[in-house]
Length: 584
Ligand code: GLY
Image (cartoon, rainbow, N blue to C red):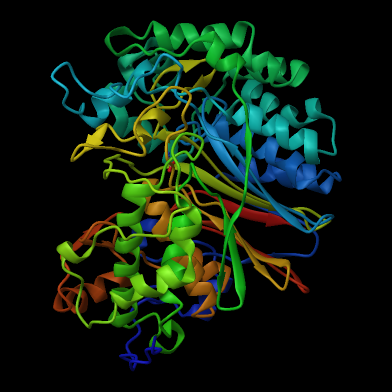
């Protein structure tokens, strides 16, 4: 296909309001309310952590400074996040780990995704008349809770790559849970805006609200002795102490006795939970290799499809301020989402044409759909016909994925790299709490409807199956060495956040501070979502002129990135959240 080299408009749309790219690297993240979007670039020589809360990043950094491995630090970061950012991830949820081992020079991906209980059926989220439930009617309560995977993921990763004593890695979170931590402004705001849903269950309500029923305020010293006890039990007994015994009993009781929306999770589901090693999904893009998490995540396949289509166009020449770049990116993303909706699910249950979906010839054909000069009409955005290893077809599913989740990256002194996205799904998950941690609502990542046009939906609920995810922990490789580790929370917008950051870094030469902060433009289903209060707004009229419906709104990514080079490490945290990068 002919490479496109349309002239850039020459207008500066996408630098932060009032701050040049150079200033961005040197400036501490300002308050979001100013409308600025810049991130401090932190440099380090030996090791680094970038995570969504300063206490989590500090805990991980200390483990690294004390000679721990990236995996050791991961356990400290995850257990502290589960305390100080409990709404996003924790022991009651699941996670995907993309890990680069500097010794073997290999990338391994571990799937710690939740599983549907063995008593669940495809009709889990249908009402008595066979209609899909409303989202929050499905979320709040035990019905949405899948078997948690994060603790087993920590154990499996530590068995393979841990250096420090398992027990010691729980100490930072346990100490904070016993001594207390200051409720952050973001957590306080989220509690206050949650109100009734968080008050539905006594343990949750007691933890997040004062004796007078008022939501906890920012700065309140919050202690969580139940979480400290849970951590102490896991520290002493390993993952088996979570998946069997009193903690497992309490999880099951909480799920099964949660009122009208009670779930069907059992002790057997917990006892039988396994982490799966999956083949990393890697795609070549402009002489680099972009690697991430395959099914049950749709992340790396969708990002790989976008990049595979966009490689046929000269985005570098077009530039980041050119509406034509965003037409191509937006419509490539819509085409990837059309395939995702039909084909992506847990490969242990449904055959998925991963190879066919990422085949460069197939993507070249799909890219030809972008050859026009206007937005694709909705009728033109349908799933394609990738090559199958064997014949099969599916209906289009419908899963609702709202922003949630956390992402962190870690590099240790030996050059091992962790890129991990971790979640309890919706903010505060199922709103059920036991043992000082929240239980996930990950099962609502399944399609609520079971069939489409008479065909089964690939991502329908099935017992033991893992719901499709959008989580996209990514490591970019150059000449066999890691160049960039990145990922984000954000529900199904994760795919767009990460893809945009990759294009910004690779095609537009933007540094880590710029790529985590740049204004977002995302198109999954037709309407173009533009981040309100940022330079993205200036593209609204040009995109409308190309035929898009444009929607302005908050786009709360939480990108964390570390760039690796012979000179050292550069890390940055998304200024939209409370994270930091720290290193030495
Ligand atoms: N629950 C968020 C995701 O897995 O994409």
